[in-house]
Image 1 (cartoon, rainbow, N blue to C red):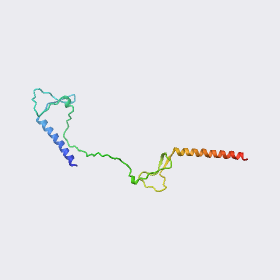
Image 2: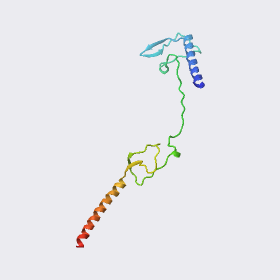
Image 3: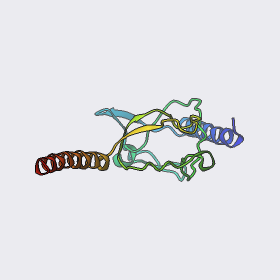
Image 4: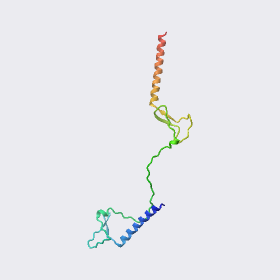
Length: 151
């Protein structure tokens, strides 16, 4: 355990013991009203410079617990970002843009030249295929008309 945590824990125990001794030396009358502990106001009790009187509002903010051992976790805050190791990554630029539908290689996995990495569903490729099919259909129709005119 860290020495700073031990010192903080011992300091907390010391404060708790001091509060307990103070409560024994200077007892205050307590009673329960509506589930909230309140100090009984006593006009005949003399006040001294070593005691305080808590009103209802202040007393509601005080929490009393049994003294015990607690673990203080050590935490540290840091600013940064999580990123891939740029020295171990290679950018891939496919000839078509689109959405990846099937992934064959996982991040960090070794791959070889020519290995299929992924399949892409590309709207540009679908449009190009559609245009090619239309062009082939137009070519066949034109060839058919040319054959008819040359006979």
